[in-house]
Length: 362
Ligand code: TTP
Ligand code: MG
Image 1: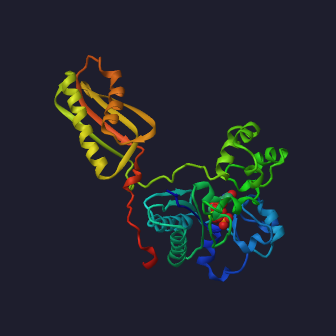
Image 2: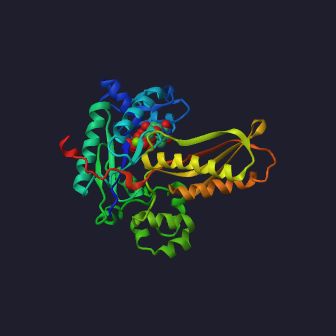
Image 3: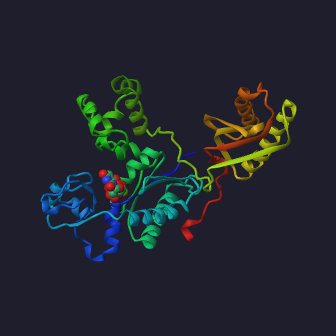
């Protein structure tokens, strides 16, 4: 099944919020950053709008240089509280379009819409709807990239900024990315670029022309990753929302402290059974299992194990708990309380509603 992944990135985020709140700035170059002090200021540009980018201004540029290139710009100090509020509002809107949502920083988010879209036409309609929704409700623009993997979706969102929607299908993505500079590949920055350039690799097509073993020979793990990205083989999943729940736990205090291993095992089973029921009900998996054990005299220990893969199976959870319990089983003291906590929760993939949301008509 084809995955449909969206990467949403707000356009010149801080500057967009400033222009929204001061309509007089519309159409003028707006720079958010430190005080330029007439060209002698220290510090850098946090961001600037696209009107300012025409003058060569960009994030991270010394504010003095920005001022020299664009003295007539509107220079503003950042109002972070305002940006935090706008970010929360935008994220709420984006996350309402799919349960599989991952926020990255203040102004980026991934959405897996595989279970709500049948084809790329649906994906486009959905992206347009999100874009419109954000603009109407929050008053700022967003660019959206749609592709089969997270990294390709990220490259796509940057493809046509601002206020763009770019779709890389499984059929056309190589053609769409081949002429881009290699620094568009997430992970290839200014430093690693030099190494690639020294080997004659400047555009994405130069990577596409190499085999995986060759890329690995030349650039090690880094090359392996870049090759996977441009060939659409980045398998990372969009982290799934867990309805805000971070962990699930249950604990039981024995009516009487006990050293009886049969009673202790029975209690572990009972707690695990209870947790498993909630797990099934909420379609959750966990990666981290924590044992809590309290002995007589209130001496309490917790021990955790984080697995490489999420689990839901109740026998597997019990097995992990018993492994953690090993350390305590020969203790002389009697046990007063036992607890299990499951954390690092994710929604299971098959739990995502398979019904197609008829977003085209809402
Ligand atoms: P970005 O998404 O990198 O940039 P942007 O949203 O301003 O512009 P674009 O249209 O290219 O996406 O960063 C998001 C916000 O993070 C940005 O508005 C300001 C802040 N930021 C800094 O404060 N310093 C920085 O160096 C960068 C890159 C961003
Ligand atoms: Mg942005």
